[in-house]
Picture: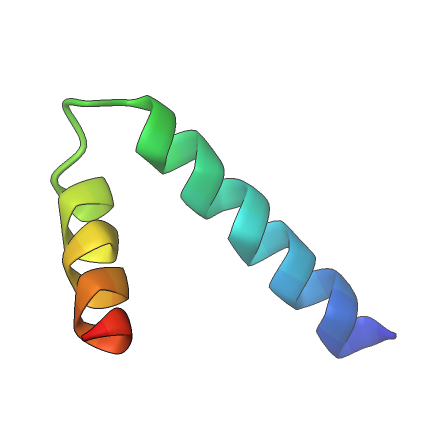
Length: 38
């Protein structure tokens, strides 16, 4: 349960970062997702 809550918080943080276009970390996350998909 503890790990699930941590993953959920990380996911929510990623969503918040993705909402902010000025965040360079959001770009990194998008690149990482593209790398996983490829």
